[in-house]
Image (tube, rainbow, N blue to C red):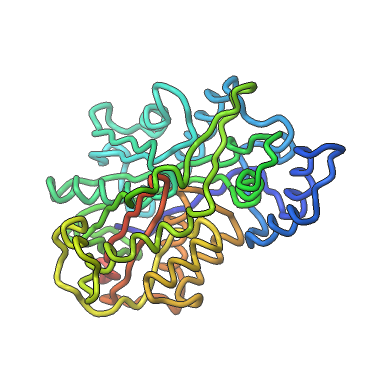
Length: 368
């Protein structure tokens, strides 16, 4: 897998602007101080939206805008994909499969069909749309791409994530989860080319090995989509137990990693894993929010410094659902002090379900 290309949405907003505009949800347009403190505690300082922030927070993105939203998502995706193909030295017609992750574009035909047309992919390209995995979709898409390459070693797979979390900001919803996600959410797109090790393309890359997937038992209600029955505006909510899902997954992750002390039955759910290798030296983890990152550090046995790219992506762009983990991977590969060729790492993403996706990484040797 080669270095992902990240493309933020067009309209930027600072945390001060978000806090001011979010007050629209309350009577007299005054944001309660405890709510403001909670929103600022997310650590998100800037982010971008597919529409102006004032529109996002006061008008919202109801069903009448869903087709337009799909067009905006496809346009972002096209730019990211064109840059990813150029970096890999590939033309669109050389792509054999397209994996597209997006939970934000409610239209049929979907964003993947728009992208095939606009990008100039072959009409016979294999399509694998990923539409209900949410924040885990970026890594989930990479795992699906790896399967394509494993079945056909000369396949070139384009993985694209394009998201508009902002369409889930229900303007009049003042619940605690709604206000947190209004502070967390951001929009953007990312793309990455996946090929076999023998078909290495120019630029930095990592090998993705030993993928792991888990639906954490008894967590189906922890993260979920909602809809306002009066306006049709979609939203996103979670329970207070949601950040604990990673702790519930710890025994399964431990069994997958080959660590001692995994709970009973964990091995069967984790599936057959490769023999444990050296301890990872780098981590690529979807942030979700501060509580998720803190639990990630606890479960993976790493510290804040090792998750610095996750924290920085959260600070600068917010939670872009499936896009974020690809941005974090790009930051990791761009880091002058990042992993050296041959070094081992771990990649992890968490999404509704609660879905956990993980994989081992190895920094690839430079292409000849």
